[in-house]
Image (cartoon, rainbow, N blue to C red; front, side, top):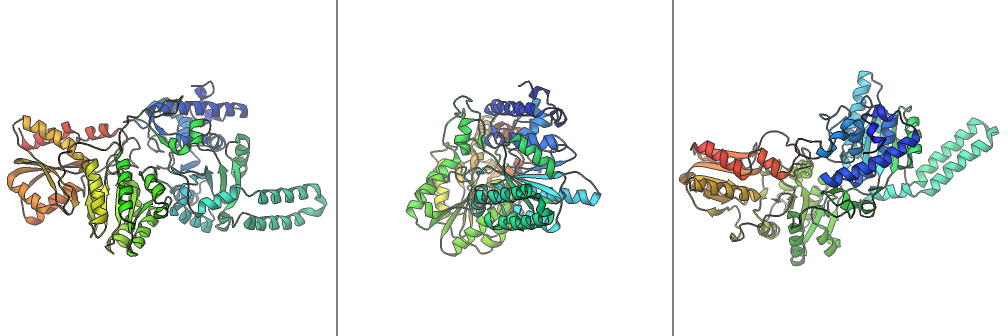
Length: 622
């Protein structure tokens, strides 16, 4: 592990070290991260970039009394190692193991749970206000990346903190990257701050004038200081943070341990809003990650020597989406693409290269992206917004108010729908069927395989008129059921196998497990009817009525929570028709689903073939 790191079991152990030992600790931490993450997978580049920052923070401040709120939290691995969890690091992102994000249930040093971006300043502000109301004295620090600063919530919080003049520290970790390259006006502003040698030169000149001409007195120096501060507003193109009420410090070299420790000791005594602009290198210390940080943001297990992934090959659902979008873009010049800082993650990079003027990365701003899409649709354009399921949750109001109420033709390509696996509670996309299908005018589709995803995207773009969502999971695309290519008809399901007594209605890729369960039931003498629903909204009412006539038991299978999901909609349908149907809804329970592989979690919650089979057998009673 390392001679220094072996001694660290809490941040108190680290405080016993000399500065030279701290530098050695940083080297050992990078080696430890590389060894562990190369085996488990996880967020690598961001954590390599914050080693010195984290060590300096936790050397100066006192955890858990002082509170550090990590934005997103994917860069908190070093924090976890230093706060007593290094011996469990082999379980990172594994079933029942360490979370890949801050989790207060793991440690009282995790001040706030995280997983999505741009939330840290708001949460830290709340903690700071609670401290003030209770008469506390602890320090509160938010650590936010420049990528997260493209999210509007960060500015709502900054505005409020500055207005209240609350004593807290915001550390802006500036590595010029989120998952993809940062975009937008704030990214440009931060770049100007990084490179403003003019201001740094003027600041040093004022300081030297004071030091070398002491006879002028403090009063004259204060005049010059005011001139310097006003110059800062000009020379740094507005210094937006100071205008919002923060004391701005930076840019600071985030890999200079001595400077960071001295700075944190100084600001510790300031009881006002402070923003420290720290410049770091994403992937620091690992050449592969430094050269291609976007490839090492979130990684599967990989060969440490070559940097090559050990994941099995195959075409992902995202790749199928990307290829189809290029085809649709070639056929229809009104089709445009939108992403919220997830171009490569959603497979949209091929479309971006093919049609750069018809592609828009709105940064981490799902709310803006949704209403922007509504405006495009109102203007006669057909926008396709590719977004992860758990990230689309942020734009619920815009879905309801700006897209669906106007009945605008916006296509939502919902990636990572259902269980995503190792990222855990904050990223599981198990709510979208529930929060989409109850919105008026919304159409919701779910494909069984790669071919059907392409067909549904074509249908959504060229055949639908109002808002439409196509949801598909994370991972390698299903290729089964290749013989079933019935053309899409609006609101109609696809009967895969005829039967009676039991009807198994499957949503999207869950058809594979449902088909295997149906095979087991046939071996027991049953003749289950197997249906690929295709449309979750509207449901195929004609097929549901037919199933109720032929079958005593209706089984719904979905990669979503049961509450308000596909099964609930089926029960509502029968209830409205006055039909006494015995409906068994199989999906996830009313809880947040922990991390683990997709296969492990589906098995744990009875959604693999064996689980579906056992649930049906128990219900049928033989």
